[in-house]
Image (cartoon, rainbow, N blue to C red; front, top):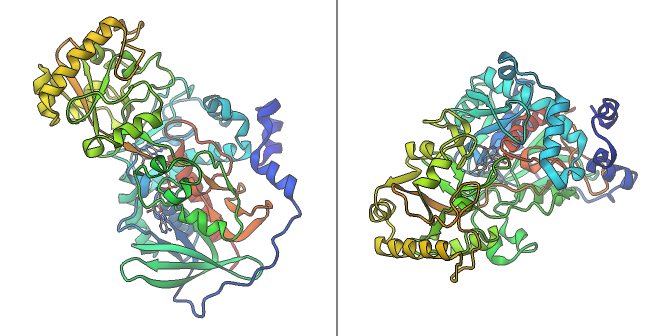
Amino acid sequence: MGSQGFSRRGLLKGALATGGAAATATVLGGCQQAPRSPNVPSKWDKEADVVVVGGGGTGCAAAMSAAEAGAKVILLEVAPALGGSSALCVGSVTAPLSKMQKDQGIQDSIEDYMEDILHATGANASRVDKDMLQLLAETSGPAIDWLAGLGVQFAGPYEYPGHHRVNRMHMLVPNSAAWRKVLQPKMQEMGVEILLQTKGAELYRDVNNRVLGVKAMDTTTNKAIAIKAKKAVILATASTEAATAYKKKITTPDIAEMPAANPNNDGSGLMMAAALGADLTMLDAWGSPGLRTNLPGPNVSSTGKQAWMPFGIMDAGAILVNNEGHRFVNEKGATDDIALAVQAQTGKICHMVFDSQVAEIFNKWPMVVSSHPDKGDVSGIGGWGLVDDFVARNGIKVAKTIEELAAAVKVEPAGLKATIEQWNNYCQEGKDPDFKRTTFGHAEAKTVGAGIKTPPFYVHSPIRVQIILADVTLMVNTKLQVLDVFGNVIKGLYAGGETGHGNLYLSGHGTHMAWSFASGRLAGTNAAAEES
Ligand SMILES: Cc1cc2nc3c(=O)[nH]c(=O)nc-3n(C[C@H](O)[C@H](O)[C@H](O)COP(=O)(O)OP(=O)(O)OC[C@H]3O[C@@H](n4cnc5c(N)ncnc54)[C@H](O)[C@@H]3O)c2cc1C
């Protein structure tokens, strides 16, 4: 592995060939942290070879693989259950060269995958650390094979037009929590000690800044537990999605306070490492708000136009209304503005309304409504959902009249009727005096000026504001060792998932989960191989 091996193959040329981690190490190499006073408890309450902080996809993969390598492992999770965002998510894991892919005769390569990811990363491609990308490319398919070998079920791989030239999107089935059901009992069989409702709070270190263990807090008793890590600590606590105080330094307070899908991902693991001089990167990817609907099961995005589609459902003519049935925002405005407007509505929710003319367009692949857990019940498409797929899971409701539609989602019927009549007039006039929206349908959809008139009518509901992930992360090397601000390894400290990916941009649907499993597995194996 390494940038030389990569460039020998001639994959990346010109500006794209510069890796962030390599650049940091070269510029600052040789600098050292000044010796610090050690931070060691008066006595250890517990000890293991490897202590993993955070029990999501990364942490569980790390704990399991460290245990497979013969290490005694303690896994800390602040929530009452394992899973994290990795068990709340849609469940796509996009990776090349899995056994499933090969069994289906799909021709793929590391080089093709890397090119596709860089292409999908667009303007940020020149910031991608190519060594880390190569690591993702090489280890994510095998991570899927490893999970499948343990009994985790995947469907696919499915298409991802525009981003991936061949089918690479593996879907966790029946939902994203499938991995937890398999890994938790297996970890227990392997002797991993799982401490729930236990928060990693601080790292112990010696005078040379070598990590010695973790100070954890039992959140039920508020008692501190000093846990010795004879070999290493692995941080897998995700990123800053719920780190409100941190985000207030970067954005406005109202945006910083938007709710995260996983409120436990409060940046604490990053701060524990920062206290030892660890380097943080991708500071601009702090977790901005988006709109999500809640199906039974994982959440799915509601308004996204996918890269390959000429237009999205909102462009085609959908509107957003509140519980009173009123529009409240320019639906084609900036995401932050829409999110703030939704937060100001009763119950902090809204509903997306459209008619059958629009529904018909979004019922034919590849015109999808959004990402979708598992396979669509009607379409059979994996990872993406058409209107009828959402209808089948009650995420979209259908009615012959506007009044019935309103009743189905507890929206004020008279308000909704009046709003739609008014919207239809605005569409004919091509003017929105209320919110200054400038699109009234889409030419390619043949809906310009059409309004919401053709029954049956549809409502995608409820829609909430949610921060699903963040990519502020620790600088790590390709062994997943955490680097300090001078580019030196902090001995005994590893990170993976959102907590540790350096300048690896995880673009598109499925790369975060692919990295979580792959990096967790690698961090666990490497930590277990450290000397005690
Ligand atoms: C609704 C939704 C849909 C998504 N869909 C997809 C998708 O389909 N495909 C994809 O690739 N990505 C998806 N993502 C993103 C993806 O789920 C995350 O990026 C990924 O799960 C991160 O894995 P992780 O292990 O780093 O974090 P997590 O899985 O969130 O695990 C972190 C764990 O650490 C715990 N923790 C935090 N701080 C501490 C502490 N101090 N001490 C102890 N424990 C702590 C948390 O409680 C949590 O359990 C989605 C996310 C959401 C929320």
